[in-house]
Image (cartoon, rainbow, N blue to C red; front, side, top):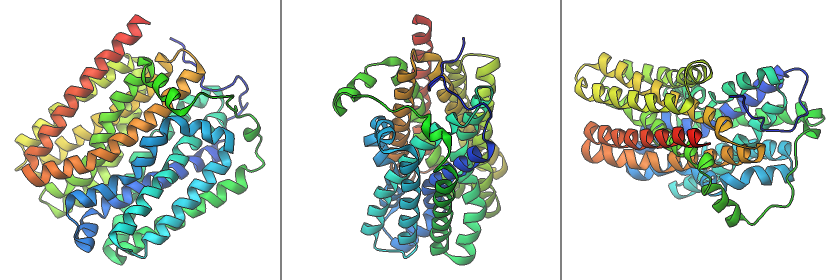
Length: 402
């Protein structure tokens, strides 16, 4: 089945690879707003002494803005200007990280995390839009696949460089380093794109219905809703697994490796799912098999939890399959959507549900682990798999019915 185009028929004749890569790095820097709190979770827990659930809420608070404004964010960006929103979001993120490097009170820290959500949302709405317009048609799937890896890469880089900063220079250095990175990306992209012709090719939306009306229309459309539901349980689980599982392995050396390796494994899963969905089977079936793999992996991890290396490998399978869920969810949208407008709405809803999962997942997993240990984590992941498989099956039926 041919893929739908998300944008107008005017396309860049050649892929602008430098700009695409810089926009991808901007996405990585935005995802580090989650990752920097993930790698420093234990240090934050010790410094603020607020308990695992409260600290988990600080980790996930970034997702609240996307949770509320995800569907309408694209419309707002098209009216204000994609470059203005992108650069403003990056500079806001840099300012908030700079404030966090002062280690303010926990209540003020939580406020900065809520505001970071607007920074993160601004980047994830505008950067992929610009990447798509900077890509030639024959490269668009490749560049959007590259974009899909930004979250996993952010965690991998944070686990590598950020953990080194944390161990050698402390918590303040982690936040300050992130501030410098995200500030730099905002400045570089402003000067690189401010006169770029791509900004003249982006569509501007016409008169839109009210916010609640738009929301109801999107939620009632199963072609938009079901891929987002599949994606929801991926984000609900991945951030929590990357945050909490390494400390459960019981081996300091393996814990350090897990912080670096697991995000990369997730990224590989995203690429793998895209390739399988392109050449082998429908993305809905890929998602179904991926959630089944998560269930098998977490069950093996529970059974072999006493052997650190086998536990590590089983969790690797879990994270690989979670990455495949992400890739298959993104691949469902152009197949199920019937128009460019419906496709754009689907991506907005995907961002909203992704933030919902990222918001409620860490506190839920923190509470389950604090109360029941590894057993609590396993039961919660298995419940996630049941929901993910169910929505994957429903998505397949929608395509058949269409």
